[in-house]
Image 1 (cartoon, helix red, strand yellow):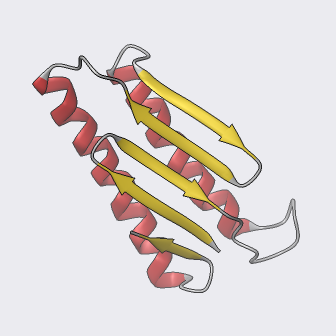
Image 2 (image 1 turned 90 degrees about the vertical axis):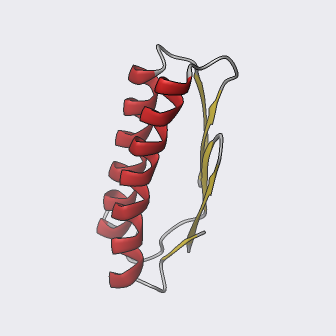
Length: 100
């Protein structure tokens, strides 16, 4: 199961969807696409003032200090949109993703 924790300064995803075998897991691919698109949006909006960490079964984005209120607001909207997409995936595949 992929567990996604959304925090005030970013988000973290851990685990594997385990919907299908590696390389054919469409649930994993959909979740990864949503998460990575969010990370790209955050990096773009913050002029690369978001720290991205990746590892096997782990993806974390942390917004760095010093963002203006407007940029932070925009980041909240980007992360909120990611949350909507992931919550929809959770409704469809509750055994494979959990969003907190």
